[in-house]
Amino acid sequence: QLLASGGGSMQAGGSLRLSCTASEFIPNSDMGWYRQAPGNNCELVSTISKDGSTYYADSVKGRFTISQDNAKNTVYLQMNSLKPEDTAVYYCVPTVVPDCWGQGTQVTVS
Figure 1 (cartoon, rainbow, N blue to C red):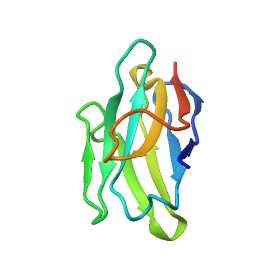
Figure 2 (tube, helix red, strand yellow; figure 1 turned 45 degrees about the vertical axis):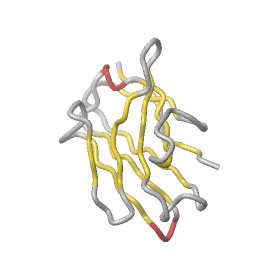
Figure 3 (cartoon, rainbow, N blue to C red; figure 1 turned 120 degrees about the vertical axis):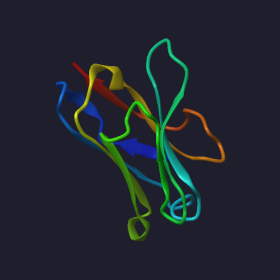
């Protein structure tokens, strides 16, 4: 089961840390954070591979950091300098199924 948590409401410029625990996928799968805002398509935010290499969408580069704790089967997304355009439901999924699915967490930036 993929369960993202840590979302909330935040003023622009603030920070949030999202977490996702899934022992059936972490650390054996490449993992990604995706997001979907109302009326928009699902968007890739960041990925982390099994070897630790990372990717960031241009829109979040320099502000977001993805990390993984294998012992806890958990992937994190540290989000700093939040902007209103970061408002979306965020999903943690294995990259082999690149879409917004599972139980996401709402992030609202005003």
